[in-house]
Image (cartoon, rainbow, N blue to C red; front, side, top):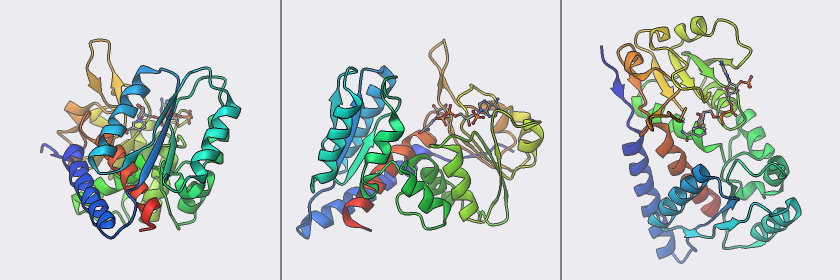
Amino acid sequence: MAAKILDGKAIALELRESIAEEIKSQVAKGNKAPGLAVILVGEDPASQVYVRNKKIACEKAGFVDVSMELPASTTQEELLARIDELNARDDVHGIIVQLPVPKHIDPEELIERIDPKKDVDGFHPYNMGRLATRMPVLAPCTPHGVMTMLAKTGIPLRGLNAVVVGASNIVGVPMTLELLNERATVTVCHSATKDLAKKVSEADIVVVGVGIPEMVKGDWIKDGAIVIDVGINRLEDGRLVGDVEYEVAKEKASWITPVPGGVGPMTIATLLQNTLQAAYEL
Ligand code: NDP
C-alpha cells in the first residue's frame, strides 16, 4: 500500500496564515508586530539561501525583519556585543544565529548569550532543559515542526515505538524529548549504534536526521510505519534527497514526508510560531 504524504509545504502554509492572522489582530489591539533578528556571519551560500527564505516568510507574515549580515571577519566579542544590543531592544522578540558560523567563532557561547526568552531557535540550554523536564517554553523548531506534522496524521503517539536516527542537539535529541513527552517509547540511534536496520524495522515511527543521502533503506521500514525524513542532501546531479530511500519506503509506510516539501518548510513556520509566542507570551 502506498503511503499518504505528509505535505509539509501545505501544513506550513496553513500555520503561517494563522500566524499572520494573529499578528493582524495583535496589531489591531495596539501591540507591536514581532521583531525577528537573524544573525548571519560570513557568506556560506546555503546559509544565505536559508536566511533569505526566513526573511521572506517573516515579512509575509507581518513580522519586522531586523536581521544583520556580518562579514566572516567579525570577532566573537563583536558578535557577543551585537547579541547584547538585541537582547536589550524591546522591538526585538526573537534572535537566532544562523549556523554554521566561521571556524574562529564559538557558537555555543553565542547561543548561551541570547536571552532565553528571545531564543526562538530553542537551542539555549535553558530551553533544552525546559523541554527535557516536560515544561517546554521555546522548543527547537525542526523537531517541534515534526510534532505538528505528526498531529496531522490523527494517530495518537502514546505507546508507539519511535526510533530517532541521529542524535544532534538541533534534531535528534530534542526530537527524542518531544516524542518522549507524548509518551512514545523512544530509541535513539547514532553513529555508534549496532544493527540500525533491525532497530528501524521495529519502529512504528521513524524520524531520520543524519545527513547521509538515502542511508535508511526502504526495506527496513515496518509495514504501516510513519516515516519522517529530516535530511536534506544535494546530490552531484543537483537533485535534493533525504536520508531515507523514499521510493521504496513509501510503498511500506502509512505516512511519509517527501524531500523537498516535507520537514523543511515546517522548520521556518515553527520559527515564526516561536517568535509569535515570544512576542505575546502566548
Ligand atoms: P549532525 O551532523 O549534527 O548530526 C548527525 C547525526 O547523525 C549525529 O548524531 C550522528 O551520530 C548521526 N549519524 C552519523 N552517521 C550515522 C550512521 N551511520 N548511523 C546512525 N547515525 C549516524 O547533523 P544535523 O542533525 O544538523 O542534520 C542532520 C540532517 O538533517 C542533515 O541532512 C541536515 O541538512 C538536515 N536538517 C534539516 C532541517 C530541516 O529543516 N529539514 C533542519 C536541520 C537539519 P553521532 O552523534 O554519533 O555523531
